[in-house]
Image 1 (cartoon, protein in one colour):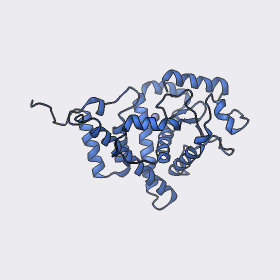
Image 2: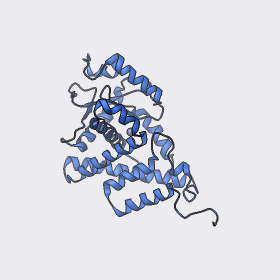
Image 3: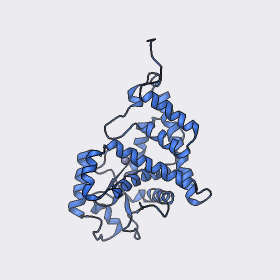
Image 4: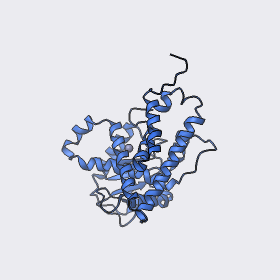
Length: 277
Ligand SMILES: [Zn+2]
């Protein structure tokens, strides 16, 4: 979602709804009261993703999320809404809003997002969409955690000091650490849910590198900035982010080396040159 749209949506949240303490006539109508269009067909998959994320976060987590369309959604949780594309960017899958304590998910954008970032090569591994959404929700939980750490009064000051990229990295870190902690609960429902997310992230990482190597032939050896740099001002390079999270989760030497190699190329320090220097 473009910044202007996000601001506009936030304004809609504030002016139409006030904050999370409003009284809605029914949970199903809440999404529309937020100025978005509810997407009931996406409730099952988004609901299961919410359940997986909550399981991985565990009962001790300071961040809680719940399906916003259910009757028993807790006021202590951030409500997750499944939304139609109205008001969202084509490739924007989800966004969190502090003002309404909610996360809006546009599941319909996922296939376009995957095509943009992974291409359509036959060698790509199939990925579990529900677990991918669950990881993204975990990342959003990271943003919420950061908001919780900062007092509202000082938030404006700190927001201007912390770059958007730094906030994204902090949210990734939160998500990676949450998975790593949950993996320690081996054999439990929480441990199994975390293992599935870790597997999905490995598959995403593999697919990202396959796309880079096969669909951008020669670009890796040349350290093409379009492959290793950041594509915009708000988010760091996606492959670098996923490699970083994978290394934090597995703590394996192999994952660390793959990340190191990517970072050397990202920083232009690989020793590979097209012509002798
Ligand atoms: Zn984010």
